[in-house]
Amino acid sequence: MSHSHDRVGPWLHSVLKSYGVDTVFGIPGVHTIPMYAGLKESGLRHVTPRHEQGAGFMADGYARVTGKPGVCFIITGPGMTNILTAMGQAYADSIPMLVISSVSKRAHLGQGRGFLHELPNQQAMVSGVSAFSHTLHELADLPTVLDRAFSVFNSARPRPVHIEIPLDLWDHDVPDSASSQVRDTQPQFMPVEEDLAAAAALLSNSEKPLIVAGGGARSASEDLQVLAEKLAAPVVMTINGRGLLSPDHPLRLSASGSSEAVRHLINESDVVLAVGTELGPTDFDIYDTGELPDFAKLIRVDVEAEQLYRNVTPHVPLLGAAKPTLRALSSAIAEIASPQALAEGCGRANVARMSARAELSTDMEQAVIFLEKLRAAAPQARIIGDSTQPIYAGNLYYDAAAPTTWFNSSVGFGTLGYALPAATGAALGDPDAPVICLIGDGGLQFTLGELASLRESGANTTVIVWNNNSYGEIKNAMVGAEVSTVGVDLFTPDFLGLAKAFDFECARIAKNDDFEALIKTAVESEKPFFIQVDD
Image (cartoon, rainbow, N blue to C red; front, side):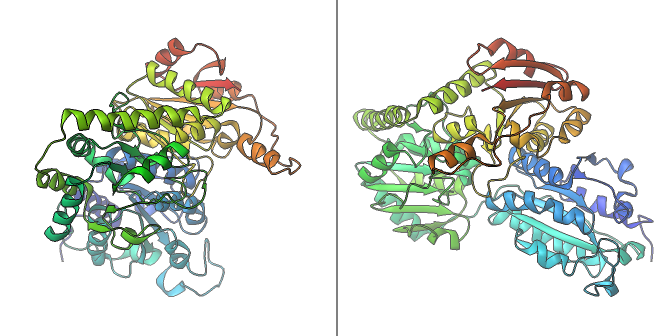
């Protein structure tokens, strides 16, 4: 048998490159050294975080901006337990992630004899935060397993996939060939014609149509806008769908379903088209105000059949990808909204926008103004957030500049420490767009070490830490619940001193300062920039 590669590592890299992979995130360890053999010569870019959780969050941010799965090389045992939180966040938000790990030798699996990094059942542990977890028993099976993984990424609801390679396979013969075609990164399948026709008829006859668009519509913003204008339908963008319509579009509504104004708009609409959204308690209704609004006649578009019936049962279910489905609906609707109908639709959206903003508390209003100043100073920047006050405010009400320019970890799984590594991954995935990491002082201390990996990577990222010397949102919630505050007031280190030690440019401001010139300087800096905002 002849082989194009002497060792498994170069062969693995070749297989991944055949799927269009160009970047991997990981920390080398004694059980992954064979995975790194030949990596430096492979042409793949390797990014080293300071913790495997950081690797997963970087892969998450990278995947959101590129549309390709973020790939991680992770060591057996503690490496896999460390990355579980990041996989859980990606699972909750339907983000494609490929985690390739080592695992004990096949003869040692489940033995409990105390081998290094041994777990009773690593695959079972990971299965709860992945579309599937697969133990490779033969090297030749890897391309087939990757076919399964990319099928999940490209034609179903994307979620993490885990593949573990037993240590004894690293010494096996490399298969003769293992190449695959690069897949389209967006699913293209469409609903059946009868369902499309039924949905088009409902929308055509609607007097007060409405669209609710989520993260599943990120790739279809142009088609969404065409359909909205054709129907004169206001568009409610969930947190993961922000930016699908531009901040100046008259049909936009970038407000949470927690808002009474949004719920009223939904209740008064006679047909609602929901595209790529769970209609769940966090992405749609961040403060979980209770039951969902009444959807008179709901048309629901999703790539996952089961998801079509979660939370709200649709009048017409459309199993298909957002982009081709919206395009087909536009083609099937013959009449374009009259100028009068368009004016009425824009008026409905405007009333809801003004009412939703008026509902904001004074603190939340000030935080939204802060975000709007950020957007004005750096209109092309992505704002990637953690669970911190201005992010919560923006989730209630904020017009993102474009799709994938606003995302954060305060919805779904809701982990802390996400923003710093996710921003690094996003900046590496799209180096032409500046990135702003917006994180609280508590959240930053979860992944503080990733300042080093950010500096090392050279990613174009500005870190803004919102400093209130506490877990501020939890402290407010405790006070509101009349619980004595415990564990929420934090010792805060000298962040600027630490940032300088990591070779960042630094500045400090108060939240009400004029800072637009500083932000422009920061995003144009050749080095990462660190700004502390004192609340």
